[in-house]
Image (tube, rainbow, N blue to C red; front, side, top):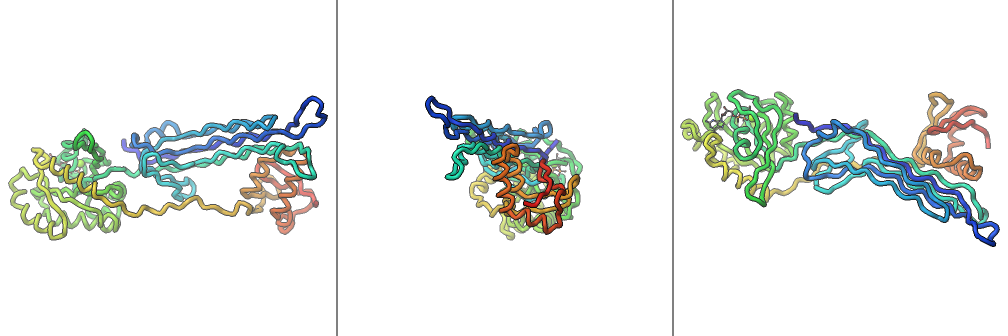
Length: 422
Ligand SMILES: Nc1nc2c(ncn2[C@@H]2O[C@H](COP(=O)(O)OP(=O)(O)OP(=O)(O)O)[C@@H](O)[C@H]2O)c(=O)[nH]1
Ligand SMILES: [Mg+2]
């Protein structure tokens, strides 16, 4: 089965909590604060690896969770950072946000990586909070939570060269001759139902990936005969081998076939219409093919394409065809890539006040939620700092505008507060 889609869950680790401690030395009655910072939480990173070519592994493992950082120690000891979790994916994997469908990254090159969930920063130890007015702060910050999300992975078949053409023209017969791929071959149309990949070795150093794409028919650009699925695969190939049954034995005209397939490619995308094409006149072992060849060749050359005679049945011309395909691949100039929209950043200080599910109000916003997660509310000084920031962000004012009254409940993340006028 050919799998090219997966859905995974990634969760980064929180940062370790900052420590609150004081120096203790002989003859020094009250040492200064020396609580260290927490370590960074582990991130989840996707890494493109040239040795993989399917997303099949994600059928068995879908959840990837990194660990949290270690807490800070005394003597200004910083906690150890947690290790990142690295997920290897095939080159050509497109990563989308599962909820919005926004493209987050497109891993096209070997070794390219994308941080899918970012580990939280370690909380600051109390040593960081010394000021001119407070020489001995007792509070420390908790670690920042890591991010988490569901992602969609999509692998567009990453073949260098694609075999396209009508059904039964001999595409599968060709790939089975030039590579180790063993697709089904039969005298009826639509024998091949999913794309098949094969590696073509020219010699020990030179090779490329060839794709046998299921037969295309009129209307493929509108999705007829699963056309969309196949054209999506064709899109990423760099060179097209347009296979034609030169014998025309199925009652079709080779010249017409050539035009019709090109029309489907053009209707699907301009990029595909502009893709370099080598026309492959197949079944040249049949006498009817010889009869049609000159007319077909003249027409194809007039359109600016090269044409080559082969027979998948006898193997004639296939070696030359693969050399030509390889040469075209070397002279391939990359097209501008699909626009990658980065993660849309909103103002982290912004927040929203909505009616709560189990409280009168709920406050949602990046920084305020982070602050709640990182504050140790058992400590008076930490609470005081929280209140300062809370006012600076304008949350109190905003709540009053929404008509909050003394004693009503307000939720932020997992904390519920009772509203009190300051
Ligand atoms: N005489 C002759 N027959 C061939 C040649 N190449 C393929 N065939 C025959 O043509 C028929 C179709 O071949 P396939 O390779 O399955 O064609 P395909 O293009 O992959 O077809 P779909 O998968 O349906 O799109 C089979 O019966 C093959 O044996 C050739 O060079 N000469
Ligand atoms: Mg086939």
